Image 1 (cartoon, rainbow, N blue to C red):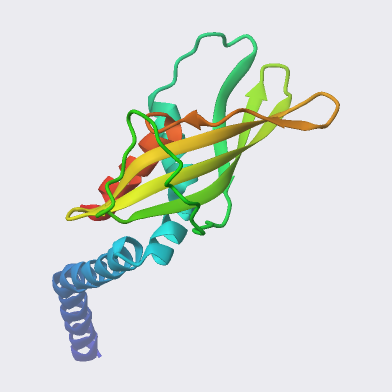
Image 2 (spheres, rainbow, N blue to C red):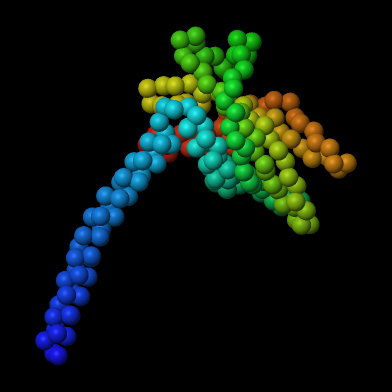
Length: 192
């Protein structure tokens, strides 16, 4: 009986030692495989997959930008805005030949891709009111040797009105705003 008990203990010891020794190697191999697959799936040059991944992640990246740049000018009224979700991407392009500005130009030899999506954003007031806004984003990208690059982000902000209507702002350049910074951060993480 004691011999069986010792044999069982030896077996358990060898089994556990084997798991302890080989498990990190197996997990590291699986992690590399999973990471490589997800990065390839997310960051390849396939425009449709890239836009789906970007809009899926944009709320998280936008909220990171909001949190890291929080400024508290007037805490008595409203707390910061949070991006709740983004819509399904629309990649049907508009003609860019009439679109010109001093800081935006895409040469004819570079292919420009466009992405349209909306975000649902929520702001909480100090008196427990919830203000929801829907914002409309138009992003223009170009392909470079390092991958996709954001050229311009334009946003129309949607504001709820007291009578239940909804008004929309004129287009604003948000390339350096929350969405532009979030997209650039996502592209950086995606490509590295």
